[in-house]
Length: 53
Image (tube, rainbow, N blue to C red):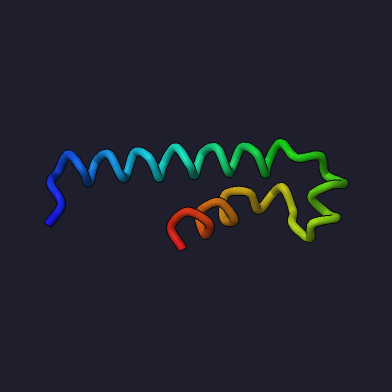
C-alpha cells in the first residue's frame, strides 16, 4: 500500500504532466494540429486521456 505522501507526489506529478501536455497541444499552430488530426480546442480531453487513460 502506498503511503499518503507517495500518493500525493504521484497525483502532483500527473497533474503537472497533464498541464504541460494540455498547454503544448493548445499552443500548437492550428495548421500543425490539423495535420496531426487533432483540434487545439480538444487539448484538455486529449491531455486527460494521455495522462489518466
